[in-house]
Amino acid sequence: MARSRLSRRDFIRMMGVSAASAAAGTNLLRAGRAFASRSLQGTTNISFMGWGAVEEDEGVRAAIAEFESLQDEVRVTWMHTPDNYNEKLLSNVAAGTPPDTAFISQSQYQTLVHDGLLLDVTDYVQADPVLGQEGYFIEPQETERAADANGRWRGIGSCWTALHLYFNRALFEEAGVEPPDFADDKIWDWDTFLEAARLLTKDENGRHPGDAGFDVENVVQWGFYMGTDWWMMYDQLAKANGGGLSDGQLLTLDTPEALEGIQAFADLVHVHQVMPEAVFFNELGMDASQMIDTGRLAMVVDGSWALSFMYKISSPLGVGPVPVLDPAGQTAGQGHLHSILRDSRQPEAAWKWLSFLAGPFYETHFCRLGLWIPNQTALLTEAGMDTWFNDEIHPANYRAFVSDYVPKHMSPTIVPAGFPRAEAIFLPALERVMNGEGAAADLIPPAVAEANAILTEEYINA
Image 1 (cartoon, rainbow, N blue to C red):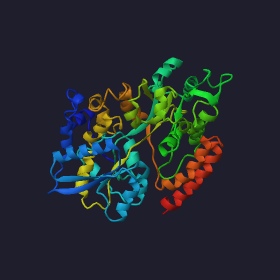
Image 2 (cartoon, rainbow, N blue to C red):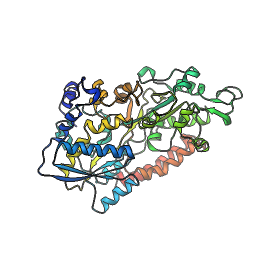
Image 3 (tube, helix red, strand yellow):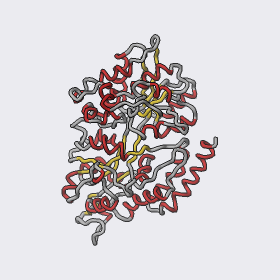
């Protein structure tokens, strides 16, 4: 989208974030006023539907209170829906009682766009004196996830979350392994990662994979783990080698890059013996964070949102980038979008609320908790990071993660319209590969072809 030019310095000044006051975040109120000052006639009530546990519920309520304190023209009713969200949202739409605005999962976004349920907000964004400025969002990632096939936006990303490594620093020191970091020359290539994972995996006799007598049935410390049972995770298998989940319309997990990436992660279990099968956690009765904390696991790939609870572990916690097979490899990123439902009777009031949510107040609230990372460029500057960086939660190198690594190395997970049908066909094939029942090159392409035939018939050509 075409936008006028705004320097980062001017943008920070406009947002009211100065170096002197950024640490306390005292000027976020000034920034909020910029998003709430668009004038409407009279008072309008709108609804906002979303999911979330206690933290998300409290954060939305805080945002509503702030928004309503800054203007008296729009009042927001929060429809907190923590369970069966997508089903209830679609039920409300079918009943003719859709919310005015709502959380939209990135996994459902393109499907709802295809079905015409979300309002086109492109013109609102372009005309907005704040959001419409060039460089407001991290690009091209924001456009990649928000734009439909015609380049029109049907929502605005709430934030970013991205996958990265969590690791037990004490285990690294004990094994003499130098951890990875977010600078370009500190990102692990695959060979470096494999050797580290080997040294960090040991059986009850202290032997490592590849050592004579290594007993994989009695491993007391695993080097690495990554779940592969949902779309962001298996997108990462492909992204680590320069591939990806889809091209926006069809699955692309059958490309040579994606197949090599999927096979490489499966080989961590069945060839290199540095990663346990998922069933291991069920048998042990522990999750990955508990395994990291107790020293049973050295490294795990999880979302940046996991920092909100991982920081509480007693063991020294480190974070770093996901290892890559190819220099073009990237990390997967996602985050739900905020959208206006097509049948909202108050689109102008809904936009006023939506634009406020895309400002700093709402985003910094969740960034401080370790749940989110910013999608607004002003919050990636030193002054901007001072408004949300929490020394009790964020490791010191998290500043480099959000300001340098994410803009350069994060690629959105794009989930195509109709994905639930396609996933039901593809996922069993992936599970067979990860279980060692066959090679990715044999099992994945037929499943992808079958899934893409359905997407083509029911969504692309419909």
